[in-house]
Amino acid sequence: MVLSPTLTAFLSTVAWAEGTSTSPLTKNDGYDVIVDGINGKAIFTDYSDHPFAPKFKRPPVVFRLPAIPANESTAAGRYQILYRWWRPYQAELKLPDFSPSSQDAVAIQQMKERGAIALIGTGDIEGAIRACGSIWASFPNNNYGQGGKTMDELLTKFAELSG
Image (cartoon, helix red, strand yellow):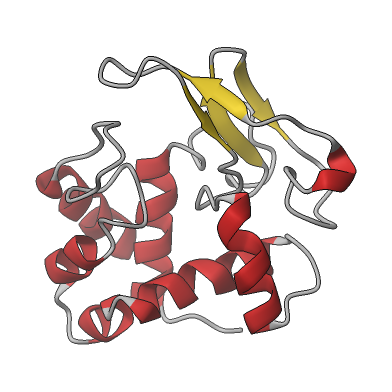
């Protein structure tokens, strides 16, 4: 799938905001990053399935937030896709694995469902960021309680990445 430069910049903004593309451990631009937890940072190398799929026997990552004493997550990959969402999207999009192209496809589908692709197409990047707030914990408008980036930070990074 060939992506427009604008969509590529938006996806790279997501990866930057989620901290995957800038992780010191990544060997693949964030596509191999597992959510940070109290046990530290981790990556995966087997893209045959989501790293929290039962066949890998990986327990959810535990992390702590001021408002939430202990929480578990299965977020993985460049866009921190939760395992519970991976299976439905994998089936819907007929994805063979958790490779970078499959991760991109899921992120794009999530954005389509919220109208963000159309907003990006018209140049309304702020609107697209708002529309995606319920997807990514690093975006404003999320209800994950993890803080995140400000609108100004995201718009600045997008402008930098879109050149």
